[in-house]
Length: 438
Ligand code: AMP
Image (cartoon, rainbow, N blue to C red; front, side, top):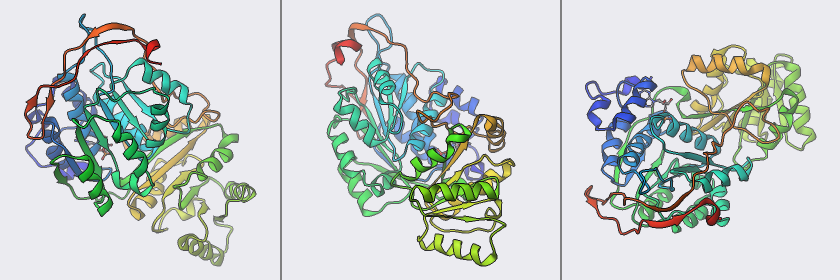
């Protein structure tokens, strides 16, 4: 439990956060900041650059979201008539769309008593709604590097007003080969900014990145939480039952799915999935009660050695199966018992430094997902894939267009590396309208 790590005594009230932020924290049910939050929040509030050595599950997301929301609302951008003006002031880069969706949700949760606009930008979904949202004006962009570059090329987004850059799971971004994209993005960002870098590990490549992008950073570090699933990123894909197999093939074609454990409800279901994957040229093997012990052992060996990338299993594989290095778990069917969800995703959390757990949810499984969410005490982000989603979610919030023309904005207060406020050099009178920006 996250609470085990909490230092008695210090409460959120000691952290000098704005009432709007504290209100949202109370709504979330948090009583005490986690260790990473205790260390990171005061530094981030003071405008320091930060290296956070912390994994998912430590509360790191709130560790940067809370001070960012506080700083944004403390120095609002407003027009002469007092109307809020929405410019990209914060950019968060994440390696995967699942993480982007989680971070976006975190901004919505902790920014619920503010009028901040946040937009998630990732591939695999239509670019147009994202373009519209960007052009309408947003304060916070949470993006994966590739799709963000597409928007930058289309001139959908300007970083002239950017104040804070966050690199989340920096080690994973580099593992996934995003270094060139990061360089191209950061080249477009004003050098006078606050940069926060989070990473579970600190290999030399991340150190080099930090040296290049951060100024006089403070390093904060927390140990790993003991919970097996603490490193897992969850996501639910709404998809009709008869489209699950095609969605699966699409996801498996994504480059970073190294070893995937897929769970189906029935033996026949497992066999069907294996046949479908093989038809599509993806080597897979099934593991269930109809297979002999020898067959099961061989399947497991092939999976462990990397000979077979995809193992499709029913519940028998669930407990006691310790496979190191699983990169993904896919619940092809929503588990009937909520506890099984936790056990299943525990496979990847225990084995790998990071892991993703996707759940395919057909309309008849919505109620089961809700039960799971109640049990694990958190909402699992929905990923809407066009052509698959049956329309229960909308992942891209498109704010209503506002025209402000011309606007005179109070300059925001910037804070230097020593934590002192400094005058900003930017000119803040400019003409802006959605149409003209295009
Ligand atoms: P993260 O490491 O950011 O992925 O957060 C892991 C989980 O901890 C999330 O479900 C958060 O909602 C939860 N969490 C974050 N901060 C706190 C806190 N101060 N107290 C209790 N739970 C928290």
